[in-house]
Image 1 (cartoon, rainbow, N blue to C red):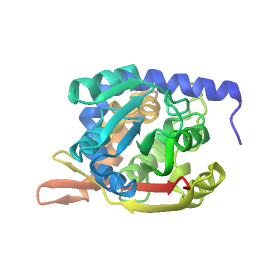
Image 2: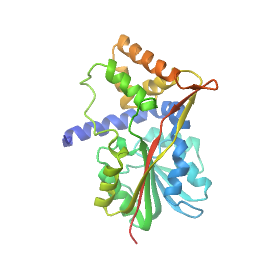
Image 3: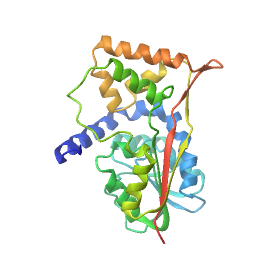
Image 4: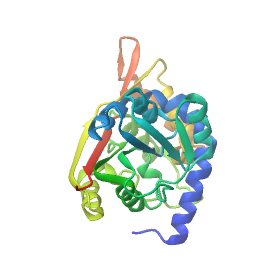
Length: 276
């Protein structure tokens, strides 16, 4: 069921406030993981020396920094002022601005590539982000984005979300949200690409891994360094949260390899080209 305008506004406010609070914690818990697909995304977007690139939902600037290493001319934007400040502190040589992927402050036909790392599922109107990427791209330019792959047993999201489903209690205080894994579905991603006017849509899975020293680090990442997942966990009674923690820990213990807990958290990488 589609969300109402009021529900979408509530979701947007929840996400913005959440990312302002979670900026440093996300950087701590998720940064090493979420930057692992940056090179694959830049390859999909055909970013090379001299490319003019826009990194939307830039977060702490991981993808922007990888593009800068390729000698691209890079601009990063995020709707969270706290994230932009963190990006500026982390990569002071790169141009970062506060702006929404759904309403970009750039002229049409400006960029050779638009990229977005793990931001699509945090937008109230992702179709607008597709449209804005199309508008600001030059003819022949490419839009590429990553989202977390659909959860599976034995993988990070599958482990945690299954534990929440099995032990968690319903929480009516959280605003309704669009389907989190909507664009992990290649058919849906390609449908929106095509509706926007893009051609040659493509999706592939990019392997990514957490490498943790403690079997509790996966639970801690969701409990401290996310937005909706953190709110879901923090709203649970202590006994429920401890049951979830224990279940996640037991599953992560199965993934130990050479004194490291190697936890798969793959990304779905989709891209398409603006005709021309």
